[in-house]
Length: 467
Image (tube, rainbow, N blue to C red; front, side, top):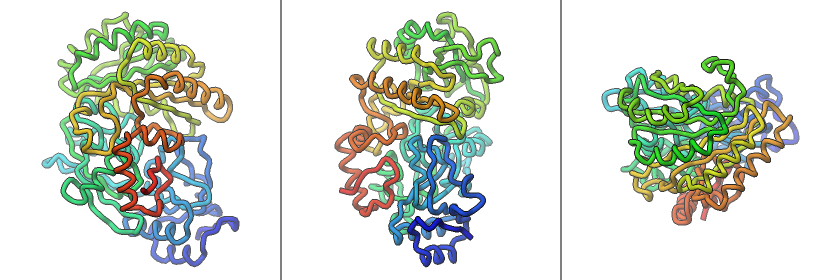
């Protein structure tokens, strides 16, 4: 039985009513599991909820929402717990924890998969790859499917098959009033528009249905590395080269120090490098021809872009983003890699002074632009690249310095910003959220919020207030 600290105003009768119907685990500050259950991926987020409700199904979710509505306490929703600014937890409120919901059902004939809200990317990939299929998702396997998808979903297949939301067939969602609804192109189409990019503003999605595509199981993928001092010349070459590559290829340029991974020879560990990470979503032999000019440039310091299982590609960056590190992030989109943008990119890479700090520049375009811009709530589909500056430490020591590097990097790119990917936003205020969607879509999202959550129960997110 959970013990709630006396300074938290959680109505005892309401909590007892919840216990009577709840089938999952209820964890409060007095429980042995509390400190472990309240942890989230970003170690710099240290919050103490009044109650963690670990749900086993829709009935539990409805009951937990009802408790939040009756008590007026803050309600946070946790899928994978990967929210950069810590929106999946709260102080003194109720965390509706969806992580026990792990159901996945793949239909290899229809090429669809249904995934519950607690599923992680690696878990979904494992099930779909058993049939040589995949849906576009992110780049770290312990990211939650729910949060990634609701914000858009960028990753290694996006230029060929679009964003995660572009492959979403339907969702089941519990509203602030506890109603279970389905949303698709044919049912509650307005809500389906909103959840494809609008985050968790409109309710708790309990299950996702994705469209799948033939991928792998072997793909040509991985990083090609050059010394950091080659960054300026490489980026100018890269800018010209990607104008001719097919949509099957998605790349990201990453500036960082080489991590001590067993797949990388020890003599390179700790060396400042610039790398291009690639994934060719097509026949390996075609990818070899497309990537040949990149592999010949320089020549590279190290070429690890080789045929490998798609699952190996998906987990490749996991060691760089483990649970518990302290992370601070800022991001923006740019229309193109202009000379000025390249100069800034090079300067910010050379200014990295931590083995854990890095930043990717994701290549966009391709199938992302092939979707009607008004068809989903996602922001600017015309952007050329997304920058994501990530300052990281193992704990509080040095964190302020890495945070300042991130802020300086973001400020340097402000004159060139064309928008921002909502999943990379921190707590940056309403103007930045509006920037993520554009004025027209933002106003439409506010109206949708008024319809589905007029009391703003679901406000611990990149919040769109009712209006």
